[in-house]
Length: 520
Image (cartoon, rainbow, N blue to C red; front, side):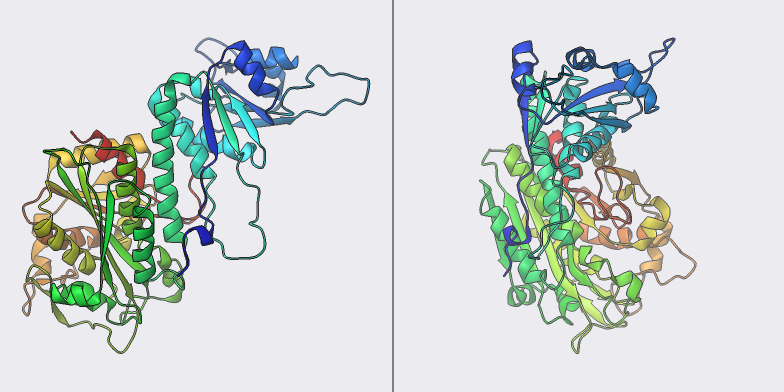
């Protein structure tokens, strides 16, 4: 089956941290294709933008009045504003004074130079230097490690290009081949960690963007094995339909019953090999395409359903990244993979199926399949891995999108410390969450007269669809500290914006990695 390399998954552009001595700057500038300099909003009581490190030196080198250039382009220094000057070359025998310097000069606004602003700056830097070889800048010397990491993430994530199977070249220009950061020699570790985080998001995006005529449960399982095989201390085990049936995972089997490609349960485990390591379980919804089953979706709602495995992609990417960073925790990722198709064997509204832990589930809507596959995966990993904490990630409900839009994921948690840690990780990573309540009075709406629980609310007066889905999942977390991330909105973008492309965003990979990094 098609490997990731065949679909065009490539390495991110190179980034070098260099010193800003005059000798080093001269060496890089004589070989660079572009120089990027920064300006910030005016200092209180001053007029005109505030030039940041390297900007005044660039003006002197080029002999250009950059203040005039900024004024001509009406720049205020706000994050993401930019002006591009492509310098002409003189006729033979004439000189402008900038021969030997980069022919493209970019002025970019950095705002308050915080992480959010710098992530936007990185995206602009990538777009304004696309197609070039080497780009030099001192923008990375503006702030601390979090802002530098955000700058690099913005640059690398904007450089992302999705899967493509075609003989013709990809449309548009690729990102610059190399970014040189002047004044960041002490930040090599930050650069390396940011690269791991950006790679995680790119992997998650790429998997989610792969079309479902290529990507089925077996294909995704094989890609998990492919990626794990190149990552030290990571092992991947694929469990097939016969094993799933033998384990009594009736919910996962039911969802995959209508598809020509049967379900898979994949475990991807990172073991640091340290005594006393905490065990973290991450469970991802992996519906490789969602027709809705017999409760079929309208065509318009089905178009983007190749991304319905974005939770599993984020979990896989986070486990690999945790290993690449050498984090001290044992991380067990569980990918619950199925295609929710329409077929002779499809499960039906009104069916009662039994989950791994013995819970009988009444089905009322086959398009509420994500919580079914998660139920089996959560109950199984809770019993077999005995985790200290459990987090599931899923493009679960349209209801969460109605409440939070596409910038935040819905967060549900049984543990306040866990909820606070995930919220903090979201702020740092730029993948934000908003905690929603597990409303106790809604729980009765999941009561069933023919099973232990209904998988969807049976009370038409209770409209909190994302909440009742979380209440259903809570049953399968047991007493383990648990959090649920509903990424149905944040996992997909209807329009490109800064470092976020249209389509699958890769949301969750960097959030989980940041949380794992901070986990005490």
